Image (cartoon, rainbow, N blue to C red; front, side):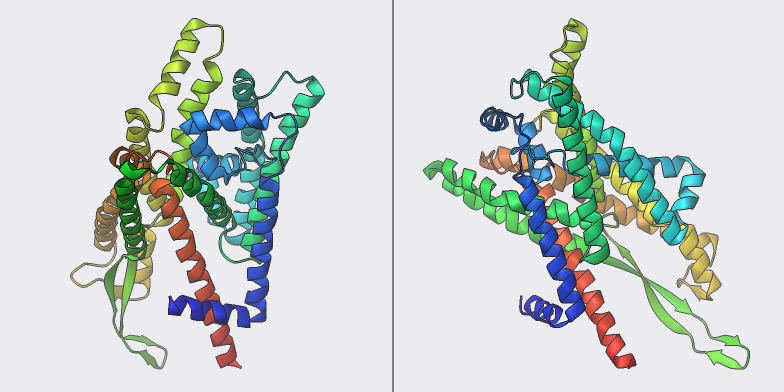
Amino acid sequence: MKEITEKLQLLFRDPLLKKKAIFTLAIFLFFRIFAFLPVSVIDLTKLKLLFSQNQFLSLLDIFSGGTLINFSVMALGLNPYINASIILQLLSAIFPQLEQLAKEGEYGRFKMNQYTRFLTVPLTIVQAIGIYVLLKNQQVIGNLNPFEFFSFIFTLVAGTFILVWFGELISEFGLGNGVSLLIFVGIVGRLPIILGRTALTINQELIFNFAVFVILSVLVIATVVFVNEAVRKIPVYYAKRIKGNRVYQGATNFLPLKLNQAGVIPIIFAVSFVLMPQLVGNFLKYVKNPFISNIATFLANAFNPEGFFYNFFYFILVIAFTFFYTVIVFNPQKIADEIQKHGGFIPGIRPGLATKQFLEKIVYKITSVGAIFLGIIAILPTLASKLTGMNELVIGGTGILIVVSVILETFKTMEAQLIMKSYDKFAR
């Protein structure tokens, strides 16, 4: 705690870093203001009653940062943008042109971000229409004339893109990753309300369960920090090299392989996919065709956040996305080539193909552990509610993982910038 306080003091002593921190906090403030700016055609009383009876919508609201229960102009949150990012990453693994574009430095990142924003538009429109039909079927919203309908859709699309713009502003001018920080602020912003609801439901029978939940929360936070910081160090030796008239002394270094290479990305990806069946089910179960209506009702019931199918597929998707994302961000062939190029070798392993196979084997093992850990964290809300009987605390392990991971990454970003500033002073 003392070390964190000292880093914060150093942060606010530096004019540039202080400016970045204030800018980030200002964007957070604007985000929270927009979160309480409702769309006019919504009956908020009926909407809050619907949320109190539907855990699926309550879960969506947590990840939207409270924008959905207030049905603000940012009601859809960053979900369409995240879904667009997932689709593009999947397409990059299929189409070599996109994969090559992603590797072209600053220009490649700019074009991929541009394609992501283009793809976000139709996804936002589809989700806005789906939300409209769902709320209309629940009598939360009345019949709208064409002008009101298009205004409703346009408002939600504009709100999502304002939120995307906020995230990009933080990434460029603030501290840390903008999208992750906005999700973090949304979750933290809902915590007081969730804890308040829980406090109202606690009685003498639940006091013990609440104590169990607090202990579990502390253990989960400690485990998340441990897994996020866990690194497998692969020793790499470099032999003496002669270049021209100079002899470069051999050195020993480490190749750090994180236990959780993918961070919170697999859970965010998996949430977007696992919520889709119930969203489609709620959307179609009111149609007049009995066959479609029965299938939609089955989907809506089977993929309830407390149901077996929901948690089973959530667990599988998290593991699958963890491996998928690790394959994208970690390239054993490239690393093996770089080690060989600079005259390095891993003790007991031949350079080249053998090094690549060794790295693949190690990454597979540690990714398996990290993927199972993320899968357990993902379904922890259901396990905790079954164990303690406290259904209000639906934020569970997913929210804790996102909050802790974002805090750790933000502090690493701050520390890196402080170290860079120290080097700049030394260079002068």
